[in-house]
Image 1 (cartoon, rainbow, N blue to C red):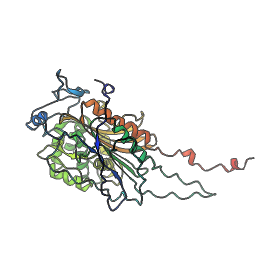
Image 2 (image 1 turned 30 degrees about the horizontal axis):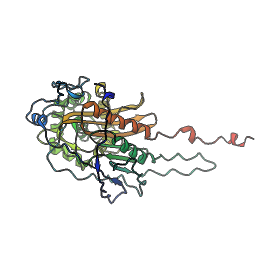
Image 3 (image 1 turned 90 degrees about the horizontal axis):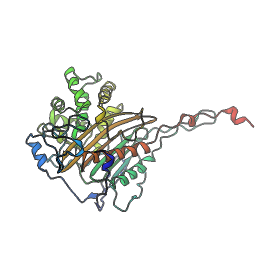
Length: 409
């Protein structure tokens, strides 16, 4: 069934808002909304997975929602995330929710734009936008070239409001975050009180990044690791992920990696169940920044290794955060999908760069009725991101004026 045919028909209800505490080292505007529904309870399909049995959620006529099959394949023919819990990239943990994410010490600024008023009658989803200080451009002089234009950070509250309005029309719970290095702005929005989101196969990028963080300046995986990393990323192979999860130190090693990267709301799955790792979109920006931008955790060679592997993701798994992005723009992407808790977990991580724009984005969804519904929710967020993230200033607009032209009568 096509994605377009499964557009949402209603908006989830919300309860009264509360305000989160502001970290001491930066000013952050946060709004909270509470969903009145919850689907955290394990259902029969999850219990089947815990027992090591392949499972999928079927409709009354026997069809698998979103096109997945009980044999574990997706509509594009790739390996499905619906495997036993020890190998499946998704699921909830029974551990207590992690503390709310703190702002990294590099994200410090004296002020934050004032939060806009809610755009609908309902209480808006949680929203955060944060500036990172960028160097001030020198003032233009009469005899010298004009100063470079400061990046326009005003897009952040606008994009946050657009995310809120859009999510009010979509089913399920969503956590979405975006970081724009040109302006230093982070947009973080959720329509749920959930404090943890099943990673599904997106944790495979975390595994890869954890291994690369140990490679130093060489940035090279061992021959054996590289042989497994290729299918883990390109076709989302679960067996390869299980082996590399152990190579990264399994639960304790990955938790150490998460803490080292400042991911305070991410907890690795136990018992070899890497797919049961829980996280937030905000936390996953740390991983994306590490693989996309210098000085964020990986050497230049390690970043190149990660980008090269992400570029091999097969076309059938390049959905979600590619939506609305023009042809010719690079998108390094890793997605995850899993039938779980009576619905679908659909997630997408991406580094989008080209045509004057450059940003990283994470989207986590839960409780979609079908796989296609979750994909369409993320696709809509992607279209908004591409529309509102500012591009680089037009070089022609920054050119020094022609003194001859100015002197002409």
